[in-house]
Length: 347
Image 1: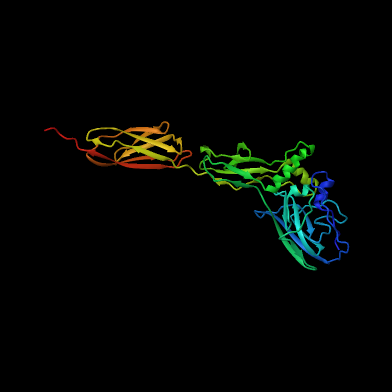
Image 2: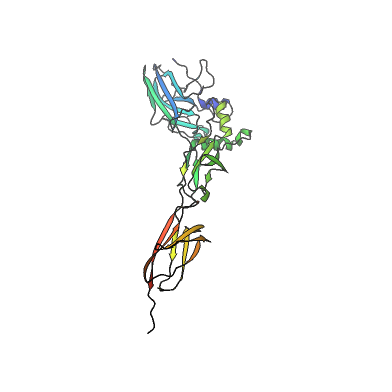
């Protein structure tokens, strides 16, 4: 029968890093239940292999079983898959490694805070049962960082990492970073169309310069946690992770066209064009046309352009103002009808 080996929390304690040993009571008259095989696979939520140190926590209160440990004991060997013979029974699974830091299956709690408080690991819902002589497959999915927010100019985007990684980092920070002066926080850098834009931090608000482009974030694993996992055998530090890119759509401006209420034949009054986007005044060029006459162009100054109507015959005339797509803005158009009345002749 496979020997019971020290749990990962005990490895942490031996390495003087974190998590003290959690006491487990061994039954006085434990009976050898026979052996089965666990076939375990570790992947992230995108389906990529993840390396981690794995420990099985039995429901009978007997000692835990660390997978991937060489004969004679020692530090667990990190891998993305295990197929090992273990005592038959019901188990919770604890994985250290990957972007989640700590991932649990079938355990009543998966909280670093609880473990630091000295509470035991208890098997709960979703536990894995391994029968005598049987093989039990299990895939554990490890969470990765996510990009949150509704993409758009002026709308903040944020990066979140799995809460268990944040909790572990906070616990280490609360211990003074173990006196190593290393960061327990991930580093986030922002990208436009796949290239860095020179902005770091957990949030970024796209500007007009981002319109029509894609934005993503690259997250680098905390240095202190990298040291922790390499010391306790949880595998290589995950490489920098780039989130899925989101498209920052151009804004559609609003055009307000102001025409005189009454135009007499022969008059050439002014027409005013105001182009805005939310509370912002839009710059650029607008084209002003009446019917099929030659169009005029004007430069928006503080969102405003002025045009002079040509001399028009009596009747209805269609006035069109167009704003071509530029920078952060989509194309836009506005139309109105102006009525020209015939000039009365004196008798």
